[in-house]
Length: 311
Image (cartoon, rainbow, N blue to C red; front, side):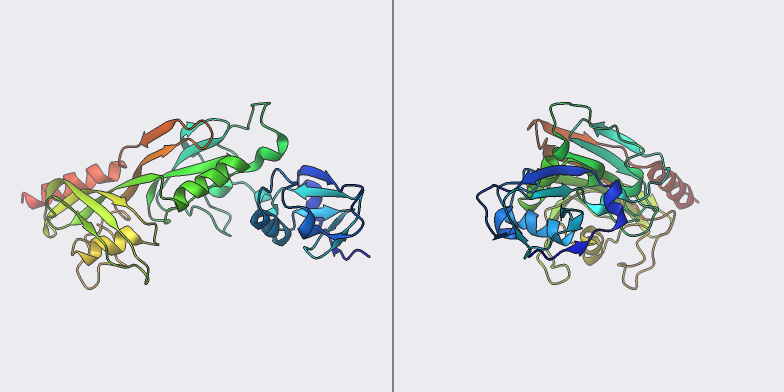
């Protein structure tokens, strides 16, 4: 006897990615034991387990639980994720790179990457990216809404990779886990910082490593000098760059949270931009190196501080 959970009304607006017809010789088997290896859009047991939690697996108009029984001839529907049908917002997003599998977009400072709030970059993607047009890509591979594969703090400007298919999303996740993707940042920090080096202080109890390189030193009326630096985080801890630069006595300009008790040079927001990505395309394996310029506020800060320092 089947045990089911009522399907919510949202199912009517969710695409069916695949239909799995249970083999005729199955007399009575747990659905979680049957599905792994049979669903292209859920390539692992872990993916199948997550799909149950996300209410993506249905039979006869009802959601299935992992412990439900199935028999030969049952038609199991694999649905797209419910979170992919959030309301969009109208917001112009600069698309730096795009094809049928991925995109790279530029997030402005002050905008959340994703989350439960309506005004996020994630909710603006569909209105800014092209649909998947390659007819050789099967329906179950296409994400109905493109998904961010990583995040930036709300205060940080910069580049983010977006997945447009399930396979590209999974492979980008693997690249991040294996640290096969290089992310570069530019920051303006307080004080004079010469040369290059590394910071390996733990962040929130976890190992963390950041490489830095001084690019230019400018006069500053506020604290005599400020330095433009290139930063390469080798780990991805929350607020890692802000914490590490403050730890060596050079907090990022505008960072009131991690500057300890030191006076903070304020201007407009946080002077940190994720300006560089170097990674292999998850499908074509082409090496992609993508860079953007710093926002205009960096030049305005330099001009303002130089002018004040000359008084």
